[in-house]
Image (cartoon, rainbow, N blue to C red; front, top):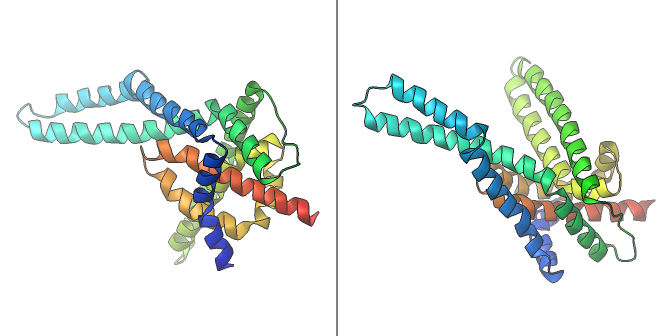
Length: 248
């Protein structure tokens, strides 16, 4: 069990090496550049930037002109907060827009790890629509998970601990689902079918998620680590599919 969990922690390294062997690391740079561009556009011209400037204007009106140090500190805090929100917004939009790129990477990874099996292909438009569908389902699942977390927190004595445990479990689950989506989606598998296949590699999935979750939770850093984690998730999904094929 522990050995398999340790194996899962190495999927990011294995995926990076495999992408190097397949000469597709440059494809990982495409969503990275897209992430940075989206952050700039959302912060500079989008709603987030407008909110930031409006908040700073309101604060500057309320704070005395002599309190320049306080105003500077508050302004920087607002900027950081907005950047964090913009970062998470950008990576979600990028996951949709860059879904065709992730689909190509998933195809190459599958061909390398499962030689002889035909990996389904589809148009870029179909990839984007599938990504939108997944994000919609994820939103609903997130609301359900959050609702359960709130209910659990009201349990006497054990509520807070159960809430933390449930929240961590949900976060790890979504990490696995997010980063395996490109592979499973191309095969037309439902969320339930994906969960069944991931269950066959549950220890490896836990190890992978434990490493990937911190990397994609740090603002700004996640702009660059998310595509890498997606490649590792494709490695995990392919291994899960291979085991499902062997057992069937």
